[in-house]
Image 1 (tube, one colour):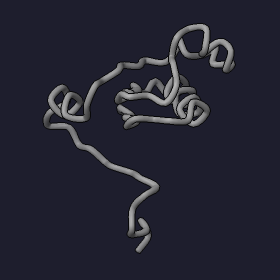
Image 2 (cartoon, helix red, strand yellow):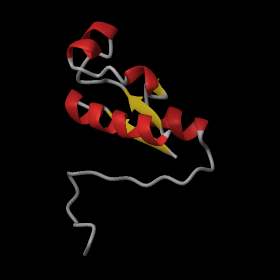
Image 3 (cartoon, rainbow, N blue to C red):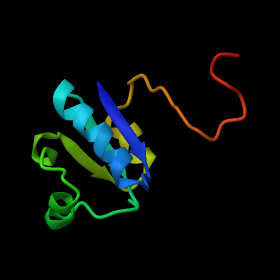
Image 4 (cartoon, rainbow, N blue to C red):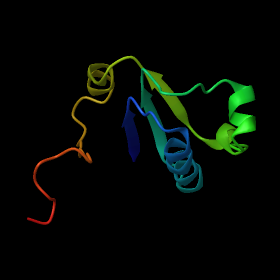
Length: 87
């Protein structure tokens, strides 16, 4: 399974998802621009000492991911939709 975060802005949310990916062996894709730095010193300051355990790749666009994983099944989730998922 792969998790894609499109232009994540909040480092703590990304960190929580990254930790889950590390524990479950799920691959994490981050689509730029990021709202934070993943430079080693910033990660250490944020307490993300598990970051080396995360299988992560960085992409410049969603199209890049679609090309790399053509034929894959994609499920999209957002907090900005007009329809609730249970309706």
